[in-house]
Image 1 (tube, helix red, strand yellow):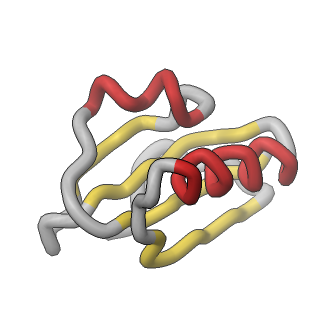
Image 2 (tube, helix red, strand yellow; image 1 turned 180 degrees about the vertical axis):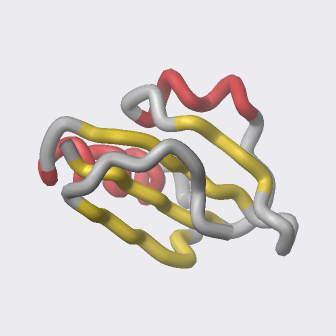
Length: 74
């Protein structure tokens, strides 16, 4: 498992979580959006990044760790 945290520019509604491998969606303190959660492998991480790119969403940062966690680092 890979704990993954992806910060994107702007706001993204919680309802989008199903589109992103069931990552949780949370607004950050800066007003941008953080997608976070555990993904099964690196290909799943790249799949989420590809979907974001296809939607024209601006990526701010991507962080992955092989240690599962439960909350975003804000």
